[in-house]
Image (cartoon, rainbow, N blue to C red; front, side):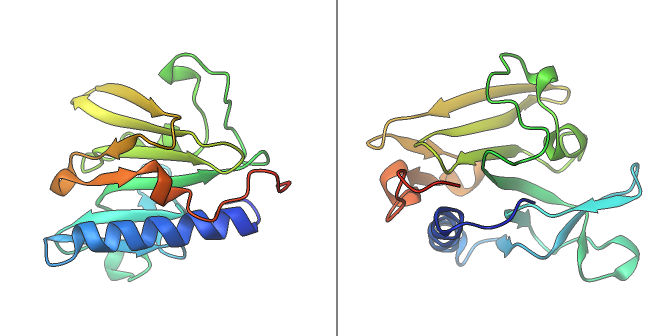
Length: 167
């Protein structure tokens, strides 16, 4: 996770609000930064900006800060995000947390949210070992997640975000 910025904080707040409304009174739970996605095969945890869990969180060795079953992960990108290559044209070229997390059997979507431009890239599990991708760049468009038929308007994701700020 890179150092936070004003825009990153605003995007995180907006996503939390949108996902809380979407997931409220359902089997989905939204968990913010600070809770690890535990990767047993790597023997390490990663800290997404936001995750969604279906049902009760499955915990690694009973530790309440190590979740094994995220179904959606959000990562808010900035220029210093390690391993992210915005020019990558194919999925295998993507690095960082997503490379490790896509092996999680519960994971259905991994969402990259840019903070320097209005751009949301969603990688979704199309089949067991096949991932697809959609990208939204228009503030009038909507990001659709398969869980609970979530519809996240880009205008709401980027509410109060100032793209003229440096990251």
